[in-house]
Image (cartoon, rainbow, N blue to C red; front, side, top):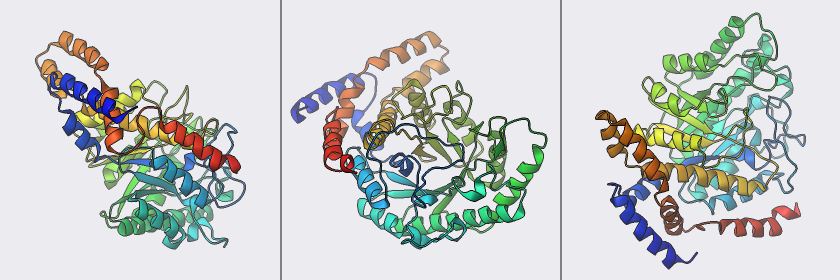
Length: 420
C-alpha cells in the first residue's frame, strides 16, 4: 500500500464523513490519546516464570501447540516490543505477579517486592508504556483446592492476603516510577464445582480478606484498585464466590473500580449494556475485552459486533476518561505475536469506528422519536470508509497499514521465535 494512495483514499473518506457531520481529523486526534492495556499472558500461554511447569489450575486453560512461545522474561519483552511496533498509538502493558524476576531465588508470592519487577518497569519506561498489574491467585500449591481469599483455612487465607497487600505496594511503586496510575486488578478463582450448601460463608470470608488488603491506603495518582467478577469457571461451574453482584456491591461501597470481563457472563450477555449502569454509581471501571465462543474461551479479539458495541458505548456515553481498557485472551494455536497485534488493532479499530459515528445526529433522531430514521442511519453508516481512515492512521503512526504487518511477524518468526 503506497503512502500517496492511502492519503488520497483518506481525503475521499474525509469528505464522505463530513457529509455526516463527522470530523475525521478530530476523531484521529482523540484516538491517539486512548491507551489500551496489552496483556503479558498471551505471549507465553499464561505460564509465568516462577517454575518450569507453567500454568497449573485456576480454571484457566490455554489450548494449542504453536511453536515459539516466550520461555523467559527477555523473550517475552522482545515479543511484546515487536507487537507494539505494529500497533498504532501509545499503550500499556498488563503484568501478572507470576512474571516476576528474582534472579533464581525462591521467593514466594507473599514476599514479592517492587524490586522483582524492576526490569519490567525499566523496559516499559524506555518504550513509553504504562503498566497495569495483577495478583496471581492461581497456579500455586496453596490454590490447589480452588480457594484463596475465601479459604476456610486461616493460614492459607493469610498467605493470599499478604500476596494481595504486596501486589498493591508493587502497583503503587510502578505507577510512581512511570508517572501514571497502575490499575491493580484482583481476580480469584474461588468457587465450587457442584451443589453448594453454604454460599454465604465464603463471601463473608472474601469480604474480610478484601477489607484487609485495601485497608492500607495507596496514592490514587499511582495505584487504582479494581475487583473482577465472574459467572463460572472450570471447576467452579455451580458457585463462584466473587460473583458480579458481590463485586458490584463491594466496588460501590468501597469506591473501587469494577472490572467487567467480556467473557465472564452468560454467552448472550454483553458487557456493553453494563457500562453506563455501573458508571452511574462508580467513578471509573476497568474492562477486560475478550471473545468467548460458546463459553469463556478467551479467543483472540476481532472486530465483532460485540466489540463494536463496547467501543460505541464507551464513546457515546462520554466515558473515555473513566474507562480503562485492557485485553484478556490467550491462544496457543496461532502465532502469539500475531494474536497480540490482531487483538490490539481490532480494539483500536473499534474505538475509531465509534469516534467516527455521527452520534449527535443519531441522538437527535432518537429524541425526536424517529426510530425508523435512526435504524436506517445506523445501517447506512456501516458502509462508510472506516478502512481508509484506519490505514491513514496507521501511516501517520508509522506502523504498517493493511495486512503488511503480517510480513514483519513472519520475518520475526523466522529469525527469532521459530528458533526457540
